[in-house]
Image 1: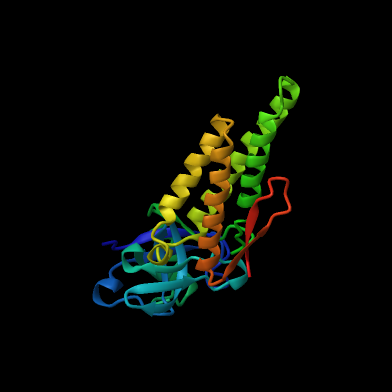
Image 2: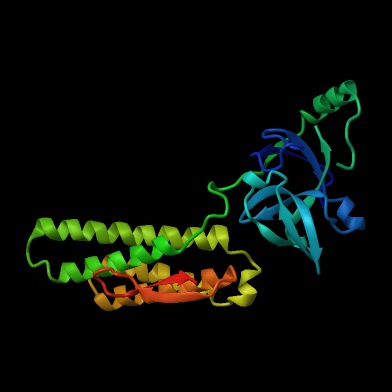
Length: 92
Length: 165
């Protein structure tokens, strides 16, 4: 469980809401009480790296994630709940 | 966002408070160009390895020719390993394993075979490498919902390449 963790965004795929080098606070607490929902911005593990993207769809415990900036987003596709670190709860 | 700082003062205070927190990196970028993957380079590299292997067997004792052919064989076996590894690591996702349970084994065999073709001058290994990369190319295109076709490559190896229909 991550109470609060500060992350620096690296890249442009979440612009305009999260600019390159902006900082956010992430917590896993919200997902103790409810599951991630489409629209949530989440941090998750993918190939040993932490990524930050928006949940687009949920299907049987799997989550389709995408960047907001469609011209500069890595096609990650579906991830599972265990990959999710937490939800972006605050933009610093 | 669930919570958003409403005023500049509050936001500045929060920034100051959280400036003492350690920061980690969260990636929000892509490998450019985004989503452009193709096993074609790997297939060309496999054919090149086969071609160089065959030419090396005919090279006689001309050390200059042998060294040039060996270098190209080495380079293309390495290129093939890179191309296949990138597709495996960056393109394929966990969910692909449901439809292609042999994916990991396929990649493992290709990488081992590619290393073997570097170590030896053996046409059988090089031919098997071409076949394994073709199978990998078929997995790749099927994962994108594309049917494939094997066509004559037109290369001196007289082998085939896999293309999407």
